[in-house]
Length: 133
Image (cartoon, rainbow, N blue to C red; front, side, top):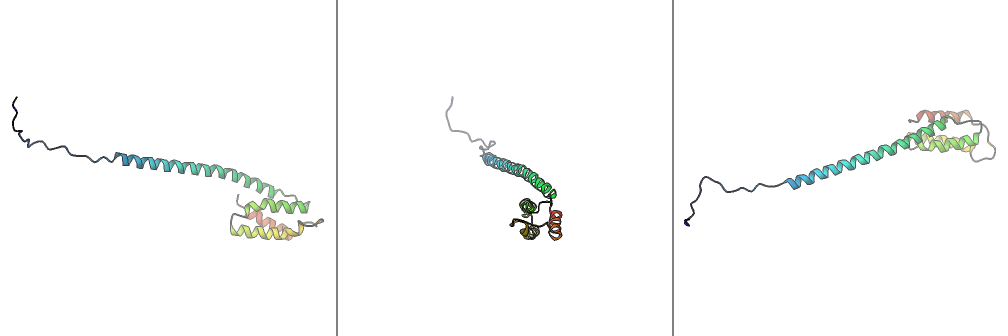
């Protein structure tokens, strides 16, 4: 074996360093998957919660439609109670509800009350027509 002066090699280039960005890409993919997972869970929760709310609204609407006008005092309380859930739909619904409640006041706080008059019944019918279930 000869030990001597090393001969330079001109045809072979030195090794190049390749930038490694796989960890950054991994973090981005994990973040996107987590964000999508949270979004899916949020919308699923919102959808399922909304299903129950719509069922309550439908039941209240059916109860409002089936109000019996034979007992004016109980009718006034029922319309006030079951109509409240729909008053938050819009400003217009709130105003209609408040007008209806104002009309029903004379039937609620007295011992003996008269039959519900046609004006109040027309307010009630208009309010029922405005409800969107």
